[in-house]
Structure formats: structure tokens, C-alpha cells
Length: 493
Image (cartoon, rainbow, N blue to C red; front, side, top):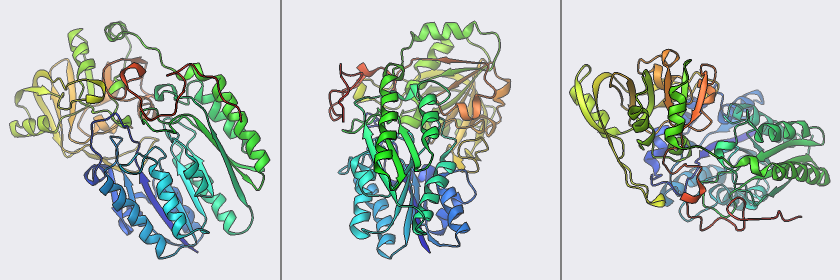
């Protein structure tokens, strides 16, 4: 058996000013051939699961590329074509099946449905070759994606701690298909519902119940069932909530389960909308919390949804209200890192920190924050993730530094980086468990590593291109009407 295993992932925030070229992929994951295999073998990723299944089946494998970039703006046409063609060249050489680790919310220049276009191009080359695809919970599912593969499985956790398990599920269905044991058929459907990412945590409602319901549905003949929350920061025609069901040659059962999942999601539509509080009020409330660590969540500037990670609004409020014993992770400012590196560990420096990026989609100019402190650490920013999400993956924040102002220790980084686990702090010499406050630029993923140590979490409604305030954004391409942008009644059928 000859299996083609590849990864091509990007969650595109069309409102983000950040460019997505090959360099951005290289800052997170860009591996070719055997290097791709070595980078992900033994990790708790979908790619790692596919490699394990191939080994168990004694299959020959080819891994043309494993590419993953932090969320940002539309993928450059040249980068998309290069990465897609790397996979397509391997398909032209022939294989018995494909196992693809994709995201589902990639918007590329010239290919707004990035994954659907890739799968159609694969099908043009190999119309009969079985294809299994694993997608992120925030996939914006399309007919093109479903039509041009055999099996789709999607994450059922957020934070995403189950990619490995979900890929095993899809890969095993594909192997059973190759052995003639099952005949997978798929059906899918979508809702006119632009759910907000901040309301999709599976420890919360409504996504917790929807994920549980989809698991309960996975009984013969249902091989896999997934509810996708979608990615609302992609101004894309098919953005929104959807569901896909795979059965063993039973399209009627697939349709029944799909409709049950979509009915449950639509009934809970109001719960998918975030309602916050003024920033000064949230920080003042946090100041009154006596037991820490207290997570201060700067969710409107979350790099794992395409934020610039250099908006200083929440940090400025924290300093203004005089909070003490705060660790901040992290602020993206490569120029500030270079300035601190030139000064050296122990030196006192004054920086115009952050605010290097304008955000024209929301009409905001970058505003830096002048801070003075001592340089406490300088590192290369590399470490291996040990938390439950992406376990075993080597990651990099790029050249990094710690600025200590006294009340606040600020981790300043050169690559956009999500706080998946405590390593963001421990790799630069800060023990987050000892801090009273942890200011994190995250939405939900922080829970994978930080929920076990947090005593409280306070949502801080700052500014940024990942804000949950829909009024900030001008949607031009998403299908209308769609809730909550419009008053809408769900169409039937």
C-alpha cells in the first residue's frame, strides 16, 4: 500500500493586516519530504496520527509537505500555488490513498476556498483515489470540499486537544474502505449562523453539548459526525456553522443525523454570541480578586485568530490601574527584542513597545506604549510543547526577551505565538504559577495549558482584528442574510 500524507493548514482572517507568505509558514511549520515525517512523527497531531496508522499498516508513505502558518491575512497566491503544487506533484507520481491534515478556513488570493480548490485539483489528477481529510473545528465547510474527498472528520474539542484522535478515526475509516469493509458516503449542511469563536469552547455551552451529541451519533452505520463552528473572521461566502456526517453506505441515516445536529445548533444560536463589559470595569474587577493566578484574556488581539499581537490597550489599562505581580505573554515586537538584545541582560531600557501594525479594516492606527524596565532574559524563543495540545511539537517564538518594569514582566517575541502551554513563560525563566496575574493574548486555546493553574479568568474587551464586536467589521462576501448580522429565519431543506 502506498499512502500520501500531507499537511497544509491556515486559518485566514481576511480582516488581518498580516501577510501570509512562505516566510510566515516557515516561522511555524514548513517541512518537506522526510523532514516533514521527522517533525511530526510521535506528536499528538493529525499528521502524527496518519504516520502512525501508515506504520501499523506497513504502508509505504510519501510526505511531500507539512506546512502550517499562524492565522493572518489571505495566503499569497505564490505561496498557495507552491504548497499546493508540492502535493499535486506527489499525487501525479501515484498513490493508493491520501491522508490530508487541512484546516478548512483557508482563503488564498485567487482561491477563496483554499481547501476545496486543492481537493478539486487532486481529484482532477486522481479521480478514483480515496481521500480522507481531517479539519479544524473552525472550518468553513464547502460543497467543493465534501464533493472531492471520501471522508471528513473534524475536531470536537476547543482547545483542540483531539486532532490525533480525530485523524485516527478518519484514517481508520479510509483503511477499512481500502480493505472493502465499508463504503463511506457523506452528507453535509450549513446554517446561516456566523457564530463567534469566543463562544465555541467545548467546556462551555453550546459547543460542549453539540460536541457530545455528535459523539453520541457515531454508532453504526454512522462512522463519523462533526459540527463545525466555522471561522467568522473570514469574510467568505460559506463562513459559518455546518455539519458533516459519514456513514457506511446509508445516505438516509447521514441526512437524519446531519439535520439533528444542525437543528440543535440553530436552537442554541443566541448562545453563540458574546456579550462583554467595558475594559476598565473588567480590569477593576480583576484587581479585586485576591487569589491567583488570574487570567486576563486580551481576546481581541489573539494571534491564533489572526490578531497582530501588538495592540497595547489592555496592558495600558492594567498599568493604569496599578495591578501588581503581572506576567504578560506575549507582545509581538521584533524591533523591541533587538533593542533589548543590544542593551544586554540587566540593562535598563525605555521602549515604545508594540503598536507597530496598523489595522485598516477596523480603522485603527498602531499605538505603542512607552515603558521602562530592565532586560531580565534573552533567548532564541524555541521550546518543545509539553501541554495537552500539540504535545511534542517543537515551536518557536523567534528571538525573545523579558522586560521587567517591576509590577509587570513582559515577554516580547519576534514570531506571532499562541500561549498553548506554560512554555511561553517557562522558556524565558518565568514561573507563571507564582504570578498573581497572567495577561494572555488568547481566546480559548490558553485553557489547554493554563486552565489547570488558573483561579479566575477575566475577559478583557480590548481592540484588535479578532474582536467579538461585529460592528467593527464590514462583511462584503459572506452570504446574507446571516445571524446575528441580520434578522434571519433558518431555511429548511
